[in-house]
Length: 219
Image (cartoon, rainbow, N blue to C red):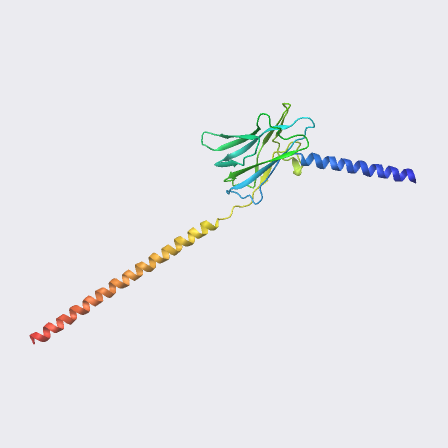
């Protein structure tokens, strides 16, 4: 009986260890987060970069962007930033590099790299393939698409799910202002027409009155 209990306890411990290791492996992926990100809008994307090595530090991160008009990285002490553009002046990639003498992201640590980006593509999901460089020269490419049936790839590319873009309140205000302006113009034009008609009737009345006076004097 005692041996059965011991074996059961050992099996449970082993299962728990595997579960912890699995969770650790999943959480060690380079990922991106942008709460409330919408298609065609601007957002702040934060890339979470853990160091998986037990002996080397993360010293550089390159993120591929989907040809964006704007990308403004948040300054990070001890890191320099390089922004790549194509011939159309669209931003295609950002590279963060640890400054000489800076520790980078050490073993067992992680770093957040935030950047304001936009307008985001008009599609349901957008991927940001990344390249993580270690101090020992090792490079890990996080660029694999999701596996079949939603299975996670070994080195998945960081990706975002984008909500449908909504009209800005400023756009609604602009439409309302234009409508109000048009209504005011219509009202003004109507007033002018009515004023013109009134003036014409007044002149006609004056002319008729003068005619009557002249006829009265002649008679």
